[in-house]
Image (cartoon, rainbow, N blue to C red; front, side, top):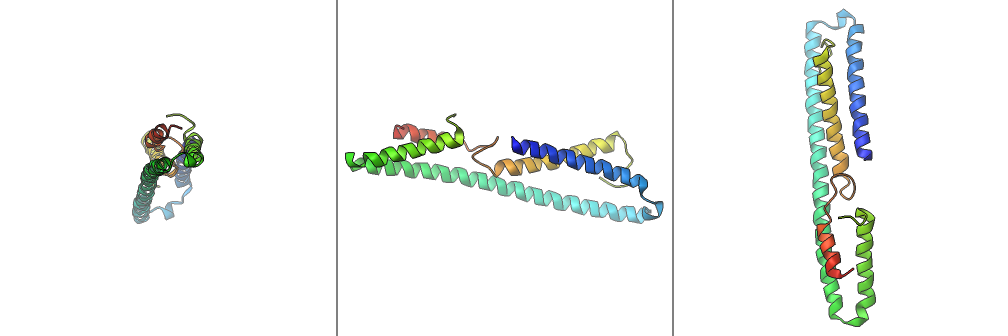
Length: 174
């Protein structure tokens, strides 16, 4: 839930900065706000918005790739663990301590990770502008929340499902 609190903090901060910018517009001398200056500010705002969207999209994609890779590696590890246990079992009783250690390590890892469970500066300040600002802040905070959550595939809301690990523990008899 730390990532949710962080994302909410980012949304509140982005919203407050947007409100501050709207207030600063009132204090901006008219000589600094002719139509051509407004056009340039609008163009730069659009460019920065596009850049932010590209960067956040790339980060969300990278975080998802990390999460998917961790899941695939966990599945591969469990398949290899079952093969190792089967090979040790073929050697007989003298491998029982090694097998017991393997079973305990897999179960301890499971318990440790899963816990044993299965705008534009020249805009007027009105309701539309404030709502748009709030929605923009929420969008940025949501992207940051996804980046943080997907970067931690063994914790948080988007955890890797432990199905393969549970099946391996059952097959190992641990």
